[in-house]
Image (cartoon, rainbow, N blue to C red; front, top):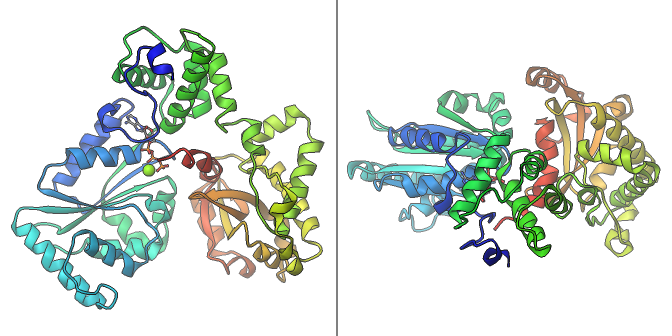
Length: 455
Ligand SMILES: Nc1ncnc2c1ncn2[C@@H]1O[C@H](COP(=O)(O)OP(=O)(O)OP(=O)(O)O)[C@@H](O)[C@H]1O
Ligand SMILES: [Mg+2]
């Protein structure tokens, strides 16, 4: 590989958090220190928010490494736990001797947990629960966490919590149901995206920690392009830098130029048309309709227009193969579903081109892409015609799963979206509507590309 050629001792741009090459710039070092202080001083609930791939898990790993030995960490990697399950998960991680968690009543489990935590406290130990991907945690479970953080002695909390999440966590926490947990958060931290100088600094840092001894391996315009294509998000920077180094190596180039970044971008599903046209197979009647729509879209737009759309469209283009469409599902489909979806999709495309990504929308339906009958049902509800023009269909990737989402209108402030949520027409209330940040919706469709590279 390219390591020898560039005199590197190891791969510089891996996409797994590597504690021996922790970059402290762009507030990462300061945030780590502040979190350590906050946890060590017994804060009940602390929160760290950052965009996808901005380095939250990395900070989590650094905390595990750096926090003093008297602090026990309970790491919850799966946030999709029910309130009861979270209690069981914590008990399990702490190896609390409850003979049969399944049958133990909640009160008994709470009692055992409290006894266990009191014991720890008397031994001078602290217990901190790390909740990763907290934006995916059900609101009731967040509320349960707040209740658990009530366990305390007169002086200190027995159970502390750190929530790690994408920006959507903040919006979830603004919900009235969990207002109390928001009030209980003692410290909130945010991981900003890297700016142009940071990106340059970060690349250099990563190269040096991998043993590189030369001068600037990436040209200035290469760095600028990485910055632009990655939006300053660290996972993307790593992916692009790694691919670009390989491209430069294959061409026998001693430096990495903009051209190499360009081929890395083409190969990385970032921004490129390739990303949107990547093969995604969904087996359904609605998929068939969407495929038809995509085909129309692809054929009726010039490359230039498609490029513009691509930069703004949070929709994965779908490509179908006949075998992938599960034609059996057609039997329940409304014969008009294609026409409806086509019309809505065209409008979605227009809407996305002009809407501000810092706006909010209300997600009124989210279904698995492979069971689209619900989409059919949704668009057949009584009263839907009146509000049809405000509904937008998007194909999303949520935690690696393909989903079809329906969004209702867009709002420039969260408060406006909240107001609209309260006054939502009845037909849109039935599937647990929630406020979504459009930028996050856009990121979701990227996150699959990213997650496929995660270890
Ligand atoms: N401070 C850092 N120093 C060095 N590398 C970093 C740092 N932060 C992030 N990275 C790199 O970026 C990658 C992505 O970071 P990480 O997995 O922590 O992001 P995340 O915010 O947890 O993403 P997600 O929202 O998808 O969970 C890491 O695997 C690591 O390679
Ligand atoms: Mg993470």
